[in-house]
Length: 107
Image (cartoon, rainbow, N blue to C red):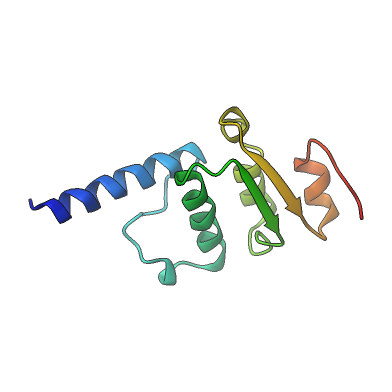
């Protein structure tokens, strides 16, 4: 196995770790993002942000393609809070906001 194959294997391993952290274990990291549905593409963006040690997420209608269950899996996961991540969540779907937010500001 050459260095490039080893790096790709390590990348996939890390991606699986972040996906597992979000309780999303059925997404194959080797699939190209363009082949994923809109919901899975949103999840990949969030995983990418986690991998770069992002501490503040601004999700302005970013997750509109996700179901309420997918939103809860990602945003209500205590592991994100334990990692010191904060999420600014902008949504017109009040039901989501009420179910997942610790604090709410209405403008």
